[in-house]
Image (cartoon, rainbow, N blue to C red):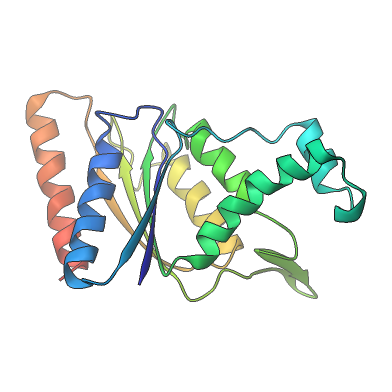
Length: 199
């Protein structure tokens, strides 16, 4: 089993979503002793944003790209290859200002590649990253689950489904900014959710 862990907090240390992602990976690894782990920390290893030069590189045929364009596309290729090689993907996803972090959005932009991770058919988009299990650990300062303010979860669900990642389970730690008692409650609930989905 190949496990890919994506940490998308802007913080390399002290992140609750990363702590939960670590806990998920530890539990998965414990029941799969031969598993290998690739970990990508998007704060420690920032990926370049999708800007105009990147778009020009992506839409230039491979045999016509400049060396600079080829190098830029290769950065996205490396992230796509990690996802393709993974059997299990664990994503740590904090909520920033009601949405996904810039780091996670940049990762989404990098792995969304027409003809590689998705394609369009007669009835619309078809995801090509099939047969993988995904776990997403979401941390929030407030309480947003099942509320109109939870635009982050809808975004993540829509994107993962778009690229064919449909077998997804979510773990929540909410109220992390609401004081010590709320933090303790959120952490206990998240750990219970992890134990329930990974028996």
